[in-house]
Image (cartoon, rainbow, N blue to C red; front, side, top):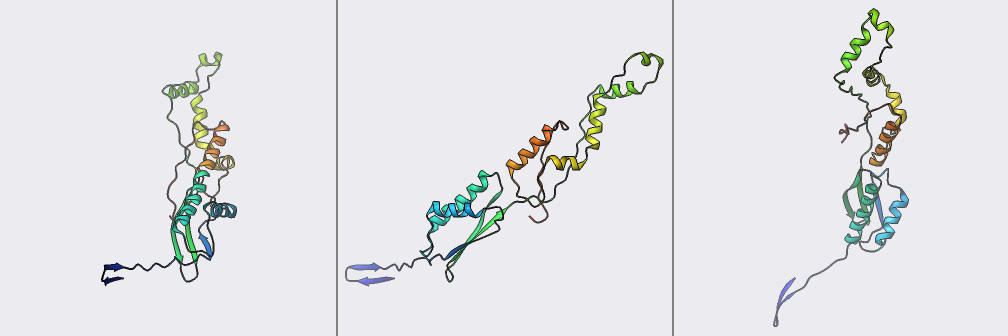
Length: 196
């Protein structure tokens, strides 16, 4: 309010405290353990029954997002709202889960001399009988790249549809697949799912 007085203008600012916080509700956080939420609340000094403190709410969001980052998971708080009537603070989390997993075996390019080795193996002349046949390493790679069953890949990479997408978990799967000795290289190609 602005009013004129004999000493000049007086500006009166009416301040109302934020509504008290009765509880915090989190939505969309299937991979966020309760103890992590409780520790984050304690760490930022969140107090129920007291007026909403935006800096503490921001600190809480930072702590929760830090948990996702530490675990190598894709997740964050995407929306916050406060209902002054009920005192409920709603935090909406968005987490990335594994949708569909598919395997694509990529046939490597053959070395230049591989075609010659395969042709030499197919020759059936009398002179070749006395010499031991040289097996082409390319034929083994060709067989491996075309015939490795998906079950073998899935056995060595235990990530399943519906689980949280974690960089740490995916790295472990790749290392485990490489340790089998069946693969020259293993790459991950994430693509957007059907439901964003």
